[in-house]
Amino acid sequence: MYEFNAKPEEILLVCSADSHYSMAKSANLLNIPLLKAEVDQFTRKIDSEKLKTSLIAKKENGTKYIIAVANMMTTMFGSVDDPSDYTSLFSALDLPYKLHIDGAYGGFYYPFSNKENILNFNNPDITSITIDAHKMAQAPYGTGIFLIRKDWMKFAQTKEASYVEGDDCTLIGSRSGANAVSVWMILSKYGPYGWMEKIFVLQKRTDWLCEQLQSRNLVFFRDKHANIVTIDSSSVDYEIAEHYHLIPDNHNDPKWFKIVVMDHVSIDKLKEFLTAIDEKRD
Ligand SMILES: *Cc1c(COP(=O)(O)O)cnc(C)c1O
Image 1 (tube, rainbow, N blue to C red):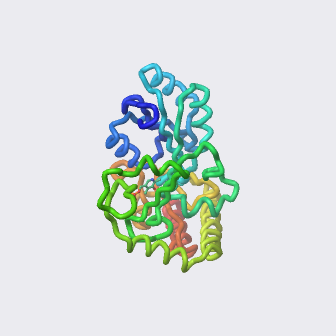
Image 2: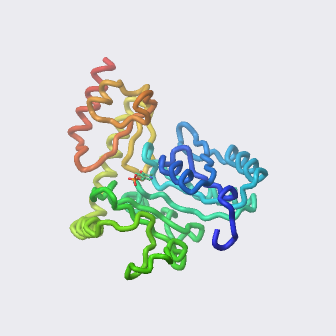
Image 3: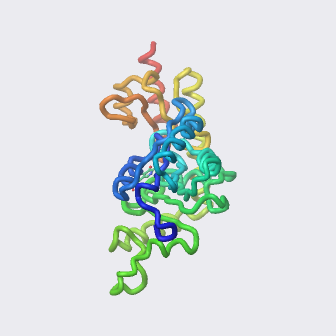
């Protein structure tokens, strides 16, 4: 808007069907249209052909600029978007874009489990990234972190905030410094190697769970670098899912149930869960 005099209705927010509901909230708050790209039911990968058709239609109807959000682990599936699924289409259709990475869930996991990942500032297509310390890092709520390339923060600065010493570059305004301290403490206590080891163990456990599910021919999704395993509701009994506190994608009509493998999700507990499934099937 500052640079191109763009009107809200000319800016399209593009994310995937598996993106967090906060995308809808943000589009609503910014008063800009939202386009959710469809994903494949089993691979959770963005359907490029359908997205292309939708983008062409949007362009004909006045879309001139794109804000795209690629996921680094979605909340329900742990799936990771390939940002070039978006950027190749925007370039082909000559639509200027800014690409944001939603690493709320995956930001404290995926960079440690997949060293080759391209969802970081080494990738010139990416302008900004969010990571949440209140997910995998288990900090108190309200420890979302927004990272943007140098020289972009000026667009978030409120010039009217004259009585504040320093700048206000936030949407939320005054907030607790104790939250920042708690994130600092958590990260310092683990240290980089401690955190690496933690993720290493969770990866091994998740691998184990997936092998077990596979050997039983159960239907599930897992990105191989993620600690989220999402099981098709046809493969797990509703009562068992509820008893083991699996998270449904929809509380009224669940199609999927997920397990997030964390410290407390031990192999012993997973074994109990698998035994319950086996007993039900016998
Ligand atoms: C949790 C989450 C968010 C937003 O989280 P809040 O905790 O509501 O700030 C955004 N994106 C993803 C992928 C998430 O998992």
